[in-house]
Amino acid sequence: MSTESFQLAAVTAFGLEAVVARELKQLGYENTTVEDGRVWFKADELAICRTNINLRSAERVSVVPARFEAVDFGILFDSVRAIAWEDWLPKDAKFPVAGRSVRSQLHSTPDIQRLVKKAIVERLKAAYGLTWCDETGPEYAIEVSLVDDLVTLSIDTSGDGLHKRGYRVKSGAAPLRETLAAGMLQLSYWRHGRPFLDPFCGSGTIAIEAALLGRKMAPGYRRHFAAEHWYRVPQLLWDEAREEARAAVVPSDGKLLAGDLDAGAISLAGRNAISAGVGSDIDFVVRNVTEWKDLPSYGCLVSNPPYGERLGTIDEAEETYYRLGDLCQSLDTWSFYLLTAHPEFEAIFGWSADRRRKLYNAKLACTLFQYFGPKPPRIEE
Ligand SMILES: C[S@@+](CC[C@H](N)C(=O)[O-])C[C@H]1O[C@@H](n2cnc3c(N)ncnc32)[C@H](O)[C@@H]1O
Image (cartoon, rainbow, N blue to C red):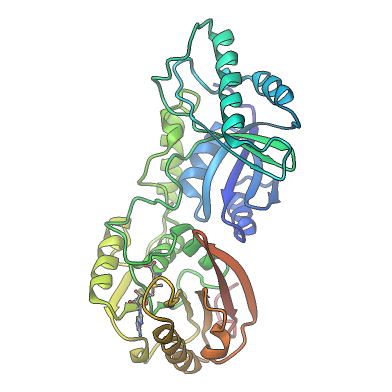
């Protein structure tokens, strides 16, 4: 096994690149380059295990064997065939190729995919002395992306997207992506030990991600990844990364609070939390947003209230923002982080945000409205 470093990319939703770059630094990968939807870094095979297991806000992690310009199919074919694919793909590798092309002279995605596939087949046949590739082995999903004639070839190490933590018993009506929930929390001043409330918790995603973050529990600890079947990333590296993750966990420091009007959602949230290993870290209650009282000081309210797009009507959503405004008015030492796609949110809620960030819940463009309260007296931020 080589210990040389190679090019990797953490793929992110737009708006979360800096959060993922910070996460990579915390994992020890300091030299990152941030681009729209990608954070580039160089590392070794162990990094594939560490990043897949630990990254909270990235969508996936890819190995990037090459980037080059191509304005015709001849250059594309020759450049792809010149890559040492055999460094990663064994002779029985299964390698589906998916493509996309944006503002590039080569724009037919089916033709690009076919050509890249053919070039890799040619390379592997020559490297392994084969007459054909039977593709009966582990999967190496390849993406060819052209943007402004720049070709990026990547091999997906994650398999299922990293938002699939493996703790959902079943999806709620409009669950937030786990990676986005973790991003909202990492963009907030919430810290382990500080009071937390999500009064619209639905299936519990934000509270569960907060509990995992607070206790330093790796979100991918319990699931599996495509690269677990790769000969180049042996099981002992996965074992090492899982052992590091297990050793990093800290004990609980107070209960997180989460509520929802819908009893079915609360029951599901409780089951999801147990399945995530944080069942005793969160108090889930069936409660209207209007009914929260006697909350401790200096907390953080992190939530995605109803949008009126995917659940309920716009009128109902607006009434809810109004009620949420009343609750927040009464919490004068708290900070609020509210994600919604409603364009008039601030006007209905009652006051202007200190900061707004454009984020995406899958394809739905949303804004995270951030309201910064006073710093708690004793917690370092
Ligand atoms: C957008 S969903 C939240 C989804 C959640 N973040 C998740 O990941 O599953 C909004 C939630 O607000 C709840 N809700 C609507 N009106 C409410 C109210 N007045 N008080 C409390 N919860 C309410 C709905 O039942 C729904 O579960």
